[in-house]
Structures are given as C-alpha cells and as structure tokens.
Length: 306
Image (cartoon, rainbow, N blue to C red):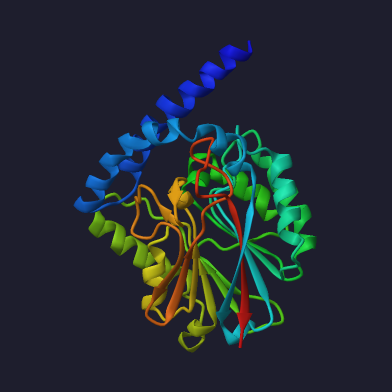
C-alpha cells in the first residue's frame, strides 16, 4: 500500500499536476503574446520538480514564513495589517490547518487581518471553514476583511456567501468600508474573468472603480485596496491609492534567489513600486501543486506609519 501511494503521489506531482497547471493557467489568465510564450515554458515543471519534490512536499509547503513591512499611510498610523491569501482548502490544506494558520497570524497581534481570495475552495469544507474564520474575528481587534478570488466562484460561492453573511467577517466585494475608529478605508475589488487582454484591462478598471465608489476622492489616499489578481496594483496606483494587496500567483511556487523560476504574471511576488503607490503580491498559504521550493507560504504584516 505504501508503494502504491508513493507511485500515485509521484504521478500526481510530476505528470498530472504540471499538465493541469499548464492548461489552467493558459486558459484562465489574460495574457499578451509575450506571456503566452512564457507559459509554454511551463512544460519544464516536471523536470524542475523531479529534483526537489521531497523537500518541497515534506517541508517547505508546510512552513509559514512571516514577513514584515513598514508602509507610510498616515490614516492608519499605528495599526498593523496582516495578510493571508490563496489557502485553497482541500486535500493539502485542512480546516484544522486553517485554524492553526489564523492562530499563528494572531501571535504577532496585528489589528486587522485581510484575506485576498481563494480561501474557500472545497464545497464540503467551506461551512466548517466559515465557522473557523468567524471564531478568529476575536483575535483581531479591528476585524477580518475578505475579498473574493476566482476559486470561490468555482466552488458554489452563493452558498458560502450566505454563510459569511451570518458572521462578523467583513466581505468587501465591490465595495469599501472605513475601519472603525480610524480614517483608514479598506476596499475590495471583484475578480475579473475577462479573457482577452483589452477586455481584461477594461473590466479590471471598472471593477476597481466600483469597489471605491463610496470613498470620497480626497480620501483615496487613505485607502488600502484588496484584490485577488496582482494587476489590480496598476489600477490602485492610477487612482492614487497608496497600498494594494493582492495574491493569486502563489509566487509561482518555484523560486530562486527570491525570484520566480518561471514567471507567469506581470507581477509574480513581493513588493511592487508603482509611482507613489505600493503593491504587494502575496505568495499564498496553500498550493496549486503539493510542494513549494524557494517560495514558502507566507504571512505578510504591514505596519502603517505616519
């Protein structure tokens, strides 16, 4: 039985998942022709994975790294915002793993937790996960804020949304809220499924404007934009929003010297400087593939300064 399981795991890691990844990314992500050529290189995944799978599967994917950043944003001065993203509940991330992750985030006593999509990714686990997140609200004095990713759409979002409405979790889906007791706004943009590049850019811009529609123009400089796709960083910067937090890429899950081995997006991981604005691409807490190499899952903390 052990060898059968090992064989199935090897097949899944080296053959099935790389092929599936290539297909899904190529079909789902709006790209230009340069990106299309890069995506064709995803066929290299099996070769890369063959030499590093044991470490990536057994160790790195299970160890959350904490990263800390200082960001100038006077409206929230003194607050710390923690970010998690792309948990992907399911075979490789259980509800108990989620509970442990939330407790780990809370150890550093951030004021706010933001979740930038692709948390609820298993119809059978989502109800229990909603309850775990609701219980965790007490760990974050200013609350938990959630924006939607593409995988929530794939996993009966209407049902999960109804469950979340009964909790204290603040869903920012095409809207914004001011953080109680502060001048800081949090806005959440919806995910765009536009396929061609021109439609993608237009829809992304429209969804960003929808998310901030109730924020006075003069207060956009007091805003953090939450969005699942990293290219919303450009839209946030264009509107003068000082900080945009995103996910979706998983940091491409394979890295070397802090860079993605096979970059597949305009922005793949970490800090992005765009004019006077900053964007952040979270490396994710779960996985596309059941391993990570040179790209550990992370908890990001943003300490807001005056």
